[in-house]
Picture 1 (cartoon, rainbow, N blue to C red):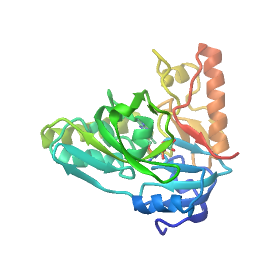
Picture 2 (picture 1 turned 90 degrees about the horizontal axis):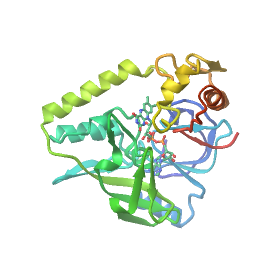
Picture 3 (picture 1 turned 135 degrees about the vertical axis):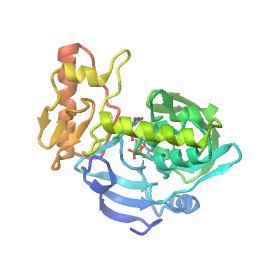
Length: 291
Ligand SMILES: Cc1cc2nc3c(=O)[nH]c(=O)nc-3n(C[C@H](O)[C@H](O)[C@H](O)COP(=O)(O)OP(=O)(O)OC[C@H]3O[C@@H](n4cnc5c(N)ncnc54)[C@H](O)[C@@H]3O)c2cc1C
């Protein structure tokens, strides 16, 4: 599909990891940050804007998304090293960034390797696992606002929290890239860490099915997967959506699920866990779009 051009009525199923959802009213793959700024400024693309990376943490409803979906993956793809720092475009996959960092002989990037999203998505979600989170390694970010203006912001301008980040001034901006800093290490060890992490994820997660990873946030002092399992929901199915038998916090698309099936299963899970455990689960995934 042609980049830096506004397409109309584009099905989004192939652009998210659950493989569900309706079309984008307008769809734009960005491979040139300055052109994106210009197109926003001259209103060649119109708000509301929804930035997406690899769609691995979102449920797009069956009615699709109004306004312009701006996709970073498949467009912005630079990852490079500048002395002690790495720069990665928002569209670079976390796995590509992790492998690049390890190959350059820096440690601690393994956690990123197993996250099937982009650097932009990892910044927005403060993605993490195995005790590490994206913002632990951020030095500064490149952002764009809804009027097309770009600027660099220091890490200190943000408050990273569990699976989210807040701009201290509540600015409504989107990520175009990030400068990251990782500790110096040994290339072979860093690459071994990545292999080990990918193997252990394969053993514990249903990676052969379309999913969006952990559906619910872990409530304080609890694990969502354990609460769901203890509420007797493993394998529970609505339409084509099922609570994974391998990992109860994952909802899998058995092949023919609609976004509605998945959302109904989410609602059912919240009600059942509340009934059984008196704990309210909150979604980690972002539910967007029209019914
Ligand atoms: C099998 C599997 C395993 C997973 N394991 C983990 C895990 O271990 N840890 C973890 O944290 N997550 C995990 N996830 C969830 C997901 O991969 C992460 O949240 C990831 O960071 C999302 O990146 P993405 O590019 O796919 O974002 P998307 O799903 O495309 O977007 C997620 C949110 O970020 C916003 N966003 C995306 N790009 C930008 C941008 N450039 N600027 C501003 N906002 C943006 C979107 O609007 C949306 O609100 C897993 C998912 C799957 C499918």
